[in-house]
Image (cartoon, rainbow, N blue to C red; front, side, top):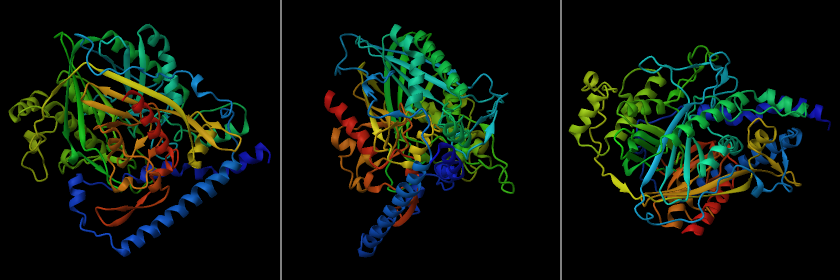
Length: 608
């Protein structure tokens, strides 16, 4: 079949490739004010009887049939019809070890500080909005395609929000080099784009003994399309099937602004490097998050590292991580029920902007690194407090409340009251306290201890190829609609390159750096991990490891292969019902989780 003929058929069928985008919009409809409410609304006394076992078998069979029809029939047929773009490389000729801009980290891990060494840390941030933003319109990520806009939301002080690259550079004084963490306000970045960012930092890294550069995304759902599938999928498809030039899905001027922004932020952080002490604390925020997909398994804790410089003139920095989709501002994606085409075209940095704003007002720098995000989203009941307002108003309140929790988790109640007054009572306790449904952020919040973190920083990463078994995602990659590096073998199988890593910060924080959105059961175990060919992470390592997801890639959802569902149902133990599930439409494939965790265990075993 000639390429031109194929491209015409491709144009007719390409709507099938957009299924994952629509599922992301529909996923935001159901929410609970807290995980506790979700559990209380459920029948938890369900016994596993013969009828249930039969239903589990029947739904499992339905899932297998659905997976086969979607992946092996429809998507596979499209894969045969739709030609590859000229960016696809030969798998047999590709040498992953020669793939540039990979930073493996440290070969040697240490357990104790080296002599009288102390922590050094620098902080920097810069905008990643393109210079022509406001004149040129950009597509919003995580909505339906072709929703363009050129304006940011304004905050409660009338200032425009911004999309940022935030950076911390860390060093434990051992002489093994500087480690860089970058958090970008974006939905996700393909590993190939992470390497473009690193290429822009190569000279800086060589001059400053940087041994590890890690790029994560805050995972906001209201930023500029950073994955390519929402900007111009049809235009990319036609160009890349009709011509020998390659048009990538992510606008190159956005990639350019991303590179420039990260360069500035890293330079600022290096210039800001100073010595100090590191403090660690964590608190359960179960009422502020919920897992929307069975099997229910997630990390309910908010983790905080607080760097306190020895020099009083220097600003302290808070590094926060917990698993939560920052999509609060995206729930009003349609602005008028009577007009389905009247869509919200403004961009937002979601709750992260407001958490940072509060911490800045209290005298702190701030960086949020996405945690074990899985299918965990924000429960906004406590922060919305029954008040009327848009989704964006709710995201503002949620961000402030998370900020207050971060600042106040180790304070007494009287100290929290003073903090609330000093920072301007952003949740309007003075105005609304006593109103039905209103909750005061510090009531019931436990006081947790801060532990000093010894200056020991260990990090090691590995790069490898992974097969893209999900033929829908393979289509997006092989046509260069998505920015992934795609490799093709002689048997028409497609692959990409990704990374996993292991991080230790003192004895307090041990981290699996994951390229995707890892389902919690792969960390914690339980019934949801049954059938997974590897031990759950905490069981295998014997450590209370946490996860930082979307680190150095955007690999989609990472599930237990025994529960892998592209469009089907999962049994919910809390309700005794079968919930619909389409998350794995957005994934590298059924065995990706096994591949990722196997490589992680290889790293762990090599250092521990």
